[in-house]
Length: 394
Ligand code: PMP
Ligand code: GLU
Image 1 (tube, protein in one colour):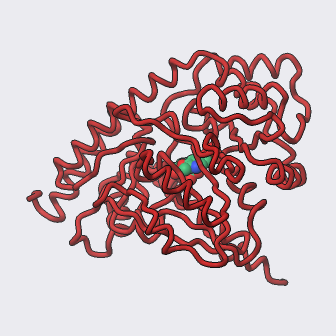
Image 2 (tube, helix red, strand yellow):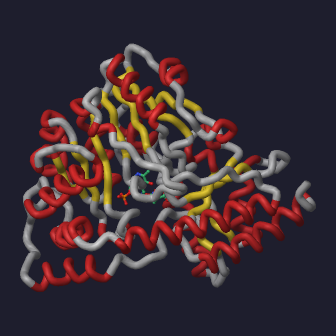
Image 3 (cartoon, helix red, strand yellow):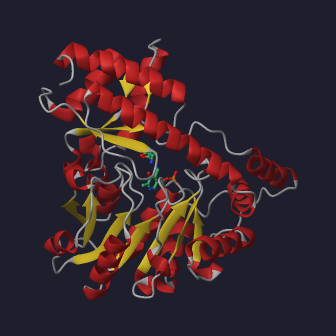
């Protein structure tokens, strides 16, 4: 046989998806697993959103939509961006995508030539590096640390700059650690991007999930960088719509033009049913969002406290719905081994920190997008597991 694509041979399966598959296998063997691996809300999509999709299908909305997305959804997104984010874009600057993930892929496709570099503050979500690599790009990881709250500084950004730097990719609130950029960080990032003539990809998928009164800020609303920012967002997290596969990007016209060419050739569009539901999500009542965020807030307080009680020095969670906790230092084999043994021995599934880049080593990520009862079961199991292996916490 002739060889397959070397570029795809170099690509690994998504680590979050890989752990999820392992959990399915173990569950099929009859193991009782507490699954804290995936950022998939335990909530079902709010009923009024499901009904809107249902109604659209029954009304015969089952045909190909425009590649860019339905007029109704693009207008609803433009209105939402203005209302909530102070971002003013025309519907023609938006593309509705099958998932936020594909919006990021389109953004990178539109920007990158082989050899181009993307600066990425890390720890960062598992799929950014592989996506950048799939275009022949290079990731310049900027390590940030839990010891100083994952704050990103201008100096750290400057140290990652090379003549091949094309873009900076940021994600606030962050998956995995939840840090929400402060105004000072936001300003430092905007100045850095402007001063070095870079593109900025801003993944804002967790924007609505912030705690203790923290406010999300959108770069596309800032006059310094609005014309060089690609805003990415989606419906999966805010509206518990992971399975619908719906996201979007908003970007300057030349970027949208290229991204739309790829979307129309590769996937045509997001699905009509998801887009009809998306209109209801953005235009309908928002108390469902507040209720889910309040639940994540309760859970993070409980789970961070429980982990600290066990002896794991888990930092506060500022936003998104994960805890990213340091693992015991003395653990043989590091955090990979910790996560593997925690799953195999104690039946608790987490994602090892190294999946989020070198700066994530020594940590594991657990999702809060599961019920309090499951978090309580997880805490009990983790306590017994750590006690048995390293003795009582100091
Ligand atoms: N960005 C981040 C940071 C995420 O955690 C996710 C979750 N998978 C996505 C983008 C993409 O989500 P989706 O494709 O479900 O919209
Ligand atoms: N973003 C979620 C996570 O990090 C969903 C899985 C994925 O797409 O990676 O768990």
